[in-house]
Image 1 (cartoon, rainbow, N blue to C red):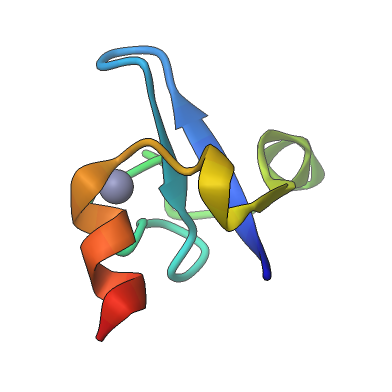
Image 2: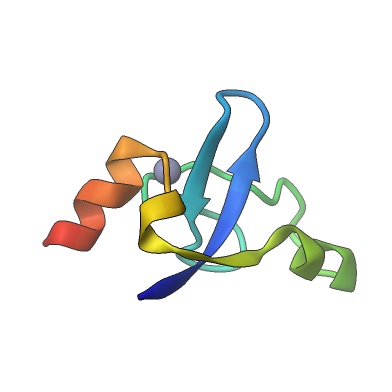
Amino acid sequence: MFYPTVYSKENDQRHIVKDKNICECGFKYNGFSTFIMRDFKKIQFKHVKEITCPKCKSVLKQ
Ligand SMILES: [Zn+2]
């Protein structure tokens, strides 16, 4: 399975995107209220094995 993910430089983790602002674990990858084309570039489709955020991974198991 592949998921839309974003990489967080702050804690060196890859998260699963929940919506246009936040990840499954609550990490806010988009600090702006408007969603612009540049933000799409942050999102990469990755295999589930490449997701390193434990909280995002636990959401997948449910
Ligand atoms: Zn996460």
